[in-house]
Length: 383
Ligand SMILES: [Zn+2]
Ligand SMILES: [Zn+2]
Image (cartoon, rainbow, N blue to C red; front, side, top):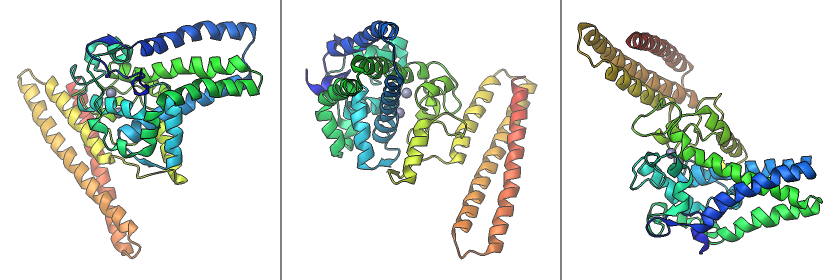
């Protein structure tokens, strides 16, 4: 079997089992379920072995989320070659196929989300298919790289694609065994840092394709199945804010609020302070608020379907309030931009700055007022 076919869902004809994927995805949980408790009971795991587990867990997890996903699949930022090399090596260690294969599938997922014929892990085919069934059986013939031509120009991506199997074996077997051998913990490191870690890393990643398309809230868009889920975000270094991600896939953040758990975002941003990442792409706060507002408006209007004088009146009020809220948002956005521009210009007139700021503050108050009216009106709709 060629290296590039490891864990690939799309390299064979109609519903053929991919035996090496089946072996890895069933073999590792069985091996971990037996070896972890037995070794733990008879020998015990030391702090060093747990530290190795933590390092491999975090390194492979972030290589998938910050590397495979946000850097290569979505081009949400740019990264220095040393960071790309790290992501390529520990991404191979995650045993989730090469960057090129992973990104090709993932871009198809975004382009054709929920379409059973073109989304490789469409949740409409059920939890099991979206979680891991799609990896166990190939259905669509040879892998199609037409959507990742840009990545084929990245020498690190192509190097990793070519030596994926070698890198996978070196990082999952040779490196842990060497670490174990050097510290006199030959099997302990391998059992935790490879077997247990591979199983957890696999299923936490798979949850994004399965659970994050089933369980959670949809604040930004309803035209696909993606959900925001805090628990999944906790398990997946921030990837659980999947509804936001499907609405604004080029944003390097998935959790946009400061309190949302998104260590992938924290890594990318802090790496930019030392020059390891650059050109971080974000969606503006007003675009995000507009998306939420449009969805709330559609939901409220859809609820007021039965014709009656009360609903007609509420519909008219909603319509009016929606327009005013949008206007307030647009005015606030331009005032904010004008204020930012004025601030940036070192020679700008201080008085003008003050004037812009006063206007900004006034419009900010207006927007607040619109938000409050909107909430009250919607509460009335759902009362
Ligand atoms: Zn994505
Ligand atoms: Zn998705």
